[in-house]
Length: 354
Image 1 (cartoon, rainbow, N blue to C red):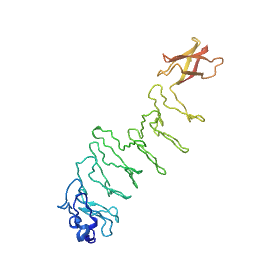
Image 2: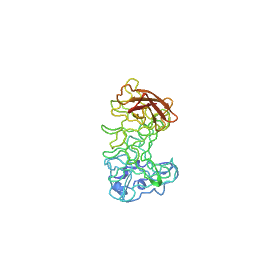
Image 3: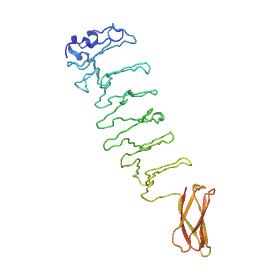
Image 4: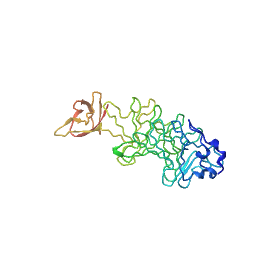
């Protein structure tokens, strides 16, 4: 591993602390890093402790004979990236490799890692469990990431599973989000799909797979745009009796669906159209009792002063035609009149617009 007598420049004083000696700080001796295995390295007795003093400082410049400045182990050392220089390597069988506790405020982290290059300040790797695990209480985050540059605060990458996965427990009746995104200006959550995947995919056994809510005027709860020949928004239901796309205006005077196309087709229906504002009324005339009209009651009070009622006889009856329709919006009824009394049953189809 090499003699530590040539590594005095690797120990840096901090604050008002006295310069650590080779014997006090780098307990590596002739055996190098192995001298620290199974032991606890504490600060030298002569070290001063004030608000600017570090209890232990070890620096590795990446020499060939040793690749870690400080090694703590209670078992076999697992090096996740052999050949690279590490500031701290800790490995145990059953306990904590590194444990730190602090009662300081939010501006003072219990553990801080700084990388002044383009590498990682903290790297976690696990052969079976979590590479990095965080737990927060009292409103704090289990894991919090921050970036003051163009990069992400937290980045996840996976070769097989999910790059980032979130799960929220139903503790104490909580309805917390598995993954929550919030942005002051940009997108709260942004997803980019691969060659065949979805940019954002949602699935729920009981709730909505994807749900969106907008509060500002003129914006959308869910907005879709396609820059090619596909669909801005598409819906499909594979279960009998389901609905592919559902729209609800919510309040009187609102529009559930607005289709706008100034120079092309606004609405293209490739199938039957069904409406609760359409139906068939029958004038039940007979020889004993000829009839020339029929009153229709509309459910839901959909008639207004601007409603148009279209009526057409279903069949061919010589000389018989619809003479007119009289509406009673207050009573939610309208009456269809024929131009003459008939002595047979005549069906009239009707449809309400507006």
